[in-house]
Image (cartoon, rainbow, N blue to C red):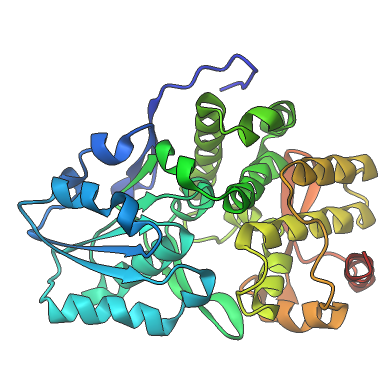
Length: 370
């Protein structure tokens, strides 16, 4: 699919994540919460909806209305990354057990990435695995965390260190939910959208540069195009490498640096997308030092990130030593070697442990002095 300014996107688009018997659809379009027939993915007689205090008042009743023939229970969590932990995960397990949910129950994640990650991990763990559905309501969760089956909770010592690969039955993306999304969270989601252009889709990166104003105005066609293209890119990578043994790691561009920032701030400072935006700039700077990326491509990357009011430097109280101490705990450390995702050019990324320590030190020093 070649993107141009005149690209027309079907308002009700379906994409298949091809994983054999674990394949599932991603439905994208306006009004999908009402139109996607959620009941078809709830095979048993019971369901548990997990949402948060922000989203539940807006969309929960629409789900309940479609499942009137089921026993439907609910867990409403507090809203925020700082609540993505084992204590709050246990609230989901407690409700499942108290309400006598069995192996045929279906969990439904209604919310952003925190709700989706926690619900998915609960589904992977409860009675050794029950079905679940993703209904993401933030841009970041629609283009990234709801697709691909990564589920997890955070630990004080590291982000997403406790989790599982576990695929949903379906992902239902209602673009109308973005109308109520605060601007800061919308822009944070754009960081993950930009990521797809950087790692594997140069044409998409060009399109994003040309459509900043339309996206900031939340033009429905521009948003649908951005979401669809992001999901297509992610579905392609996940289908090739479900459990991140190889190429899937490129989806983590900027995340090693970004996760260090989030952990340093104990998940109460920069939003995930904001931290990833900083991390992508740092990865691009390191890519220049490695000789792979042109300096002008770093400036283009910064320019697009800046266009969405996203940060390009770490918090002022964070130092190079803080990064190093936290990055050695990253999930991409194998056999004591830190692997990073670097850019070869805009539209092409690679996973490598073959970089000089002095390049990393120089990148951290430059970022922390910005």
